[in-house]
Length: 163
Image (cartoon, rainbow, N blue to C red; front, side, top):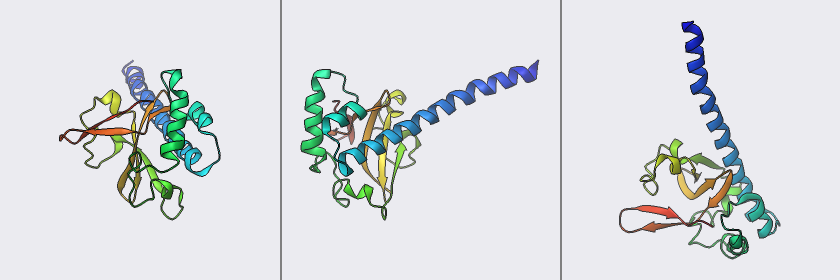
């Protein structure tokens, strides 16, 4: 009886961890596909929004598509402050592969989002190139909720602006 109980306890902790890992992998694939669609394809911004973005207010779909065309595709330094990587274009260069990691799995000393509660932190991903963070991405329900954040005050923290 003890063995059965021990087995059930182990399964109840392992299965949720496996589901969390699966969700992370799906989120990371969405992020990779999103940046590929934005920078390396001719997919319309409206289609990108429909496929990859979480837009809470459906009235904001047109504005979000405009944001993609006017900021992300034009490599706006305010959105993608990637001085060394031509504003994220280099992440598609095979000579400089990038990594996508969960904020919770990142061993670095990132302080921008460290004051967020764990429920929020688990939805934040980082694009890392050559050991440096080049972009933050907030996910919600398997879609991108934001790639745009603002630093606040002198406490070196930030908040995402949602679409």
